[in-house]
Structure formats: structure tokens, C-alpha cells
Image 1 (cartoon, protein in one colour):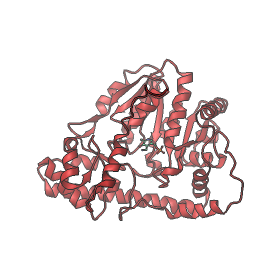
Image 2: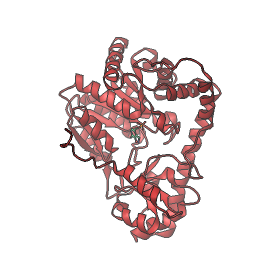
Image 3: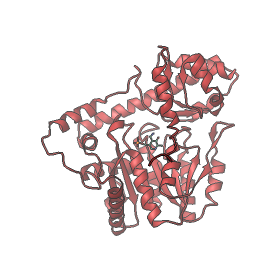
Image 4: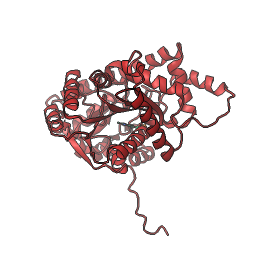
Length: 397
Ligand code: PMP
């Protein structure tokens, strides 16, 4: 019956995790997967989250299904963090939000919904981007092409090429945008550059789909959501997927959200209905436990500031590691221009120049990066950062 099934090549990043796990060298360093590690090399259990878990665990309420759109309190909390606490769009009821199975679930539900109502549109994703963007949009039935984003020679954002490309797009083209902490490059647009993109989106009537998986890990919660707020101010209609996987260190609980910003409350109520239908057809309703933990943190007046401080500390640690890596690289290989690293932000850095040296980095130095040259800066710590700098410098000399 199943003899025609072809083999799945696996996900290259996840395959690399197995190689790392089986590497017997104690000095091995994992900079391949997009996980946040603390300075001791552990994936943290946040204090605010642990306290919320005690509250949720103490509940004797039956574990019944959540509604298709998830917990209303959770959705309200998502709106607060994504759009800001005093958002005009949220206040006027023109934002429809659902709880989703991580950021991935939000992208899937959103792309299915768009495919139904914009069957003639196609999607554009940045070159490069998170691999699953193409898979999810193609899976929904869209044809997907890339837009210029990153110049591998300068190892920097190529805004001129990106904006020129956007000016050529047809109305209702779906443009997938990373509001902050671009994955994989870490190269983000400035606020002024986002303003220019918003203007092009308005002029050409494009359909933005924002994927915000790292809010708070770039410059701060509100700064990282600049594009969200700018599109709202410009009166644009758009979708935004958000993920709590990283910023709650709750990867396995699958907590995310999908919001649609509409023209008015009536349109938003229809958008909500269509999102519910897309959920029903995919997984019926989101998981309850992680969502209750997240909403407990976000809505509790003591836990919320505690959590924000914990995320701020994560962000500052990543920034400190980036600075230390840069300093070490300049020291070990001063002839090379390493400044691109400091122009990038968030969990990742991207150095295509390292890509051809991936195997050498793994074999000679036990430093695991992925094939494209992406480095997870959040895997660096004060004990390994100098060894990483030495390894990168050695392979590029
Ligand atoms: N979008 C981007 C850009 C990501 O990097 C990730 C996680 N790697 C996701 C979405 C998916 O998030 P989640 O794990 O919450 O599904």
C-alpha cells in the first residue's frame, strides 16, 4: 500500500542536533539550533513561568477543550503585547486574535485562510528566510518566490534591492516580513526603513503577513513591534503571527497567536469566524496548558514585570555575547571586517563566509553551526565565546 512513499530527508537542523548529541568531545559547542541558552549552557525555566505553572497546576477545573480561537484571556494578552496596551485598533474592535499552536500554527492557519480568500495571490518571502515559510505557504497552495533581502558579499541587509523589488509587486501580493530579529540573518530594518516599506505596502496595496517569533529579544518589546504599530497607524490591513516559544522558554507547549487587523469591527468578526474555521479543519482547538501558563504570567500584575525583566536579561545577555564574540574575532583576525556582526541583532547572526567551513568547524573545533552560516548567538556563553572566536578566525584566515 505504502510502497510509493518516498523517504523524508529530515530537517537538516534537527539532524545536526543528533550529531551534536552523539559527539563525545566535552568541549563541543552548539550554535546550530534556535534555542536560548543561559550562561551555564542550559535552556532556562523562567521564574515567572514556574510561578504561573504552580497556579495553573493547583487548579481543579476540568481539562476540557478550549474554543477554536483559544482562551479569550490569552487572546487579550496577545493583543496587549503585540499591539501595545493602548492600541486604537484593538480598542475599536478591528483586531481579531486567536491562540495558535506556536508561531508555526499561526502561519499555517493564516496561510490557509488567505488561500481561500486570495486564490490569485502569490507569496513573497525574504532571501534567505526560515525554511518553513516556503513549506507552509506552498503547503497552503500558494506559489512562493523570494525577495532580495541580504547581500552575502557585504553580509548586510540590502534595503535598496528589497524596496525596489517591493515597488514592482502586484496588488494583494502576500509579503512575509520579520518585524525583528530576522531569522536567519539577524539583519533588521531600521524604523525609517520600515516606514518606507509601509508606504510601499500602502501604495501598491500589498498584503503583509508579519512573523514575530522573537519580540523582546531585539531591542525591547515595543521597539521590536515597530512595524506592527506603523502598519496600524497607516490604516493597513494585515496579519501577524506571534510566538511565545522563545520568550517564555516554553518551546514544547506550543504557544502562539494569530491576529488579523481589519478595516472595522464587522470585518474583524468575519475574520475571526474564518480563522476559527481554518483552525477547526487543522487541529480543532489549541492546547490548553501552555496557554493558561502564558496568560497567567501576562495578566498577573506581579508576574508580568518579573517576566519582562527576565526577557530583558535574556536580550542583554545575547547582546553581551555578540559584543564579546566581535571583540574576540577582531583580536584573533584583525584583517577581516567583522563589523557586520554588530549590525545584526537578536538570537542569530549570519555569516555566509563561514558556510563553506561548516564541516571544518565541527570536525576541528567541535563548533556546530548550520550549513548556511547561521550562528545562534544565544548559544554563546562566557566559557565558550573565545573558543568560538578562535575557531571562526582560524577557518577564515
Ligand atoms: N517563525 C520564525 C521566524 C521562527 O524562527 C520560528 C521558530 N524557529 C517560528 C516562526 C515558529 O515558532 P514556534 O516554534 O512557536 O512554532
